[in-house]
Structure formats: structure tokens, C-alpha cells
Length: 349
Ligand code: UD1
Image 1: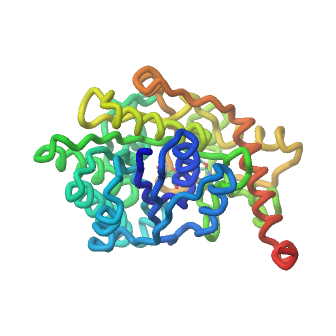
Image 2: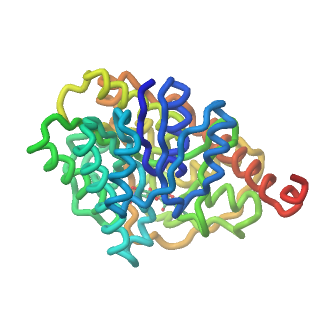
Image 3: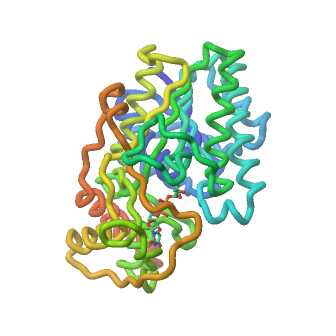
């Protein structure tokens, strides 16, 4: 069985990808420092798939500890590197933490790969590299704009590091996946997005408001040059996104990649405004959401959505789930998680 090292595998996108990898027959080793996730996610992955992934609590900023992961697992065939800090606003306040965490970790992973002759890496990138795009939908050829946050800059720098690393190491194959806005949860409701503290992202804020943890959602701006004035994003189901990683791994291991460094946009190709997301959530949950419009959030772009043609044709992958279905999975997850984690349910166990 082929072994894949998944860094950040207890995180939001990482955990969904571990499930899809195991269901596709891969053996998975998860490393995570649990700085923004919970070790119980491993139990949930086992509950879904019937297989417990190997788990090691490792901080990838620690070079020796990272290299030891590779020596302990000489069967690793490929790496999916998710582990990173990802809050845009926070990155403005603690930029050095972002640079140290996101960049050192990648460097140590690449060093481990070189040491152990692992030739394939799938990298977790973001549409943030395009900034405010000049042309919509955004293709992979759109220019990289100056990053509007240290977080965004780490994604750009990491992509450049991998490109430079390949020059003296041409046997290394990279697929960089630029995510648009991943949302939703596994349909079992056993794993989902679990931000620690106040959510920055729209959908967890919506579900936490609906369940009564937050008073109201703040809509950041209704004066954008869009049909209803709110900002537009390409919201992609997290399981659809996770499946793309399996396809990328199979492409690398099967030597089907057409160059040593490939980049794919992962989105649905459709843009939805913040108001559309709210209305759809209200429709599928048959509830009304408390929200108010406030000023724009600094650093937000007006609209961004993917041209998916290249990913669809080259990877043979397509996002399938609708916004309706996806928001319902996010809501089911929120309800499941809160029910499981109230003091009452804890004493019951
Ligand atoms: C951002 C980054 C993305 C990163 C992601 C991770 C950009 C362009 N995108 O996505 O690369 O991977 O964060 O955290 O930097 N909104 C509200 N109220 C809220 C929360 C959000 O109105 O309480 C609005 C935002 O203004 C935005 C939309 O909802 O228009 C989506 O916001 P969010 O979920 O935070 O994602 P992005 O900012 O698009």
C-alpha cells in the first residue's frame, strides 16, 4: 500500500483529505502540531473510514523532528503539505510567526524529501496569490499580485521556494493547488471546520450565529461593484476539494504530470455574494439569520472566482456539490459538534 505523509492532517482540509486518501486505498501518516486542531479528529477519521491513520505530534518548525519523520517512515511515497497558519488578519499582527511557521516548515519538509528520496509533493496554496484579479474568472496564468497580507505572501514565497528547489533537484515533482473558498463538512458530520476562538471565515461565523454562539453576523461591505453590493467568492465543497488532492497524488505517483511543477485552481467556477450565501443558508435550514451590514474588511478583494477549465480537463476532476448541499453539511456539522461537546453530553459518556 502506498504511504502518503499528510502534514496538517488533523486540520480542516487535511482531515477531509486523509479520509479520501484512505478510501482510495492509501496508507496515511499524519503529522500535526495540534496548534489549531484537535487530536480527536484522528478518532473521527477512524470512525468514518474504519482505518486509523498513523499520527505523530510534530512541529515542522523543528528541523530534526521533521527529518526524523522521514527516517521513521522510509515507505513514504509522496507528501501533501497542508500545515500552515492561515488567518489573514492575524498574519498582519504577527508576521514573523507566519513567516517562520509557514516557510520554515516547507523548507524542512523539502529537506526531508531530499534526504529520503521522496519525489512528490502536493502543496496547499491559495487564490490569494492573485490578489484583486484584472480578469474574471481567474485562470492559472493570471499574474501574481503583491500580497495584501503576510499570510498571502507566505503562499507566494512557498511556491517560489519549491520552483527554486526543483532547479538543482529536477526529480522533485510539485503540484500546487490554489484553493478558492473551501466550505462545508463531511456528510457524516464527524469532521468539519472547527476554528479555535472567533471565526474569521464566513461560513463558520454563519453556523455559529445560527446556533446561538455569536449574536449576529457582520456583513463586511454592501457597497462593492457587484449586483447586490456584497463581495463575491467561489465557495467550494471541502470534500470535492479533498478529492482533488487524491487525483493530484495519483497523477504524481503515476507519472502523469506533464511538467515537474504544475499549478491548478480549485474552485467551482461560480461566484456567490455574501448575501447569496446568507439567503441560501436561510433557505436550506429554514431559519432566519441575524446579520447587519458594516464597513468593508481591510484587505478584502471585491470578487474572485476560478476558471476551472484547466483543472477539469487535466485532472479530470470537477467540483460537484452545490452551495445548498454544502451549506447543509456545514450546518449538520455545527449541530453535531455542539451536541457532542456540551457539558451534559460529556457527563453522559
Ligand atoms: C481568505 C483568503 C484566503 C484564505 C482564507 C483563509 C483572500 C483573498 N482570501 O479568504 O486565501 O485561504 O481567508 O482564512 O485573502 N465575510 C463577512 N463576514 C464575516 C466573515 C467574512 O461578510 O464575518 C465576507 C468577507 O468579507 C468575504 C467573504 O465573506 O467577502 C468570505 O470571507 P472569508 O470566509 O473570510 O474568506 P476570504 O477572505 O475570501
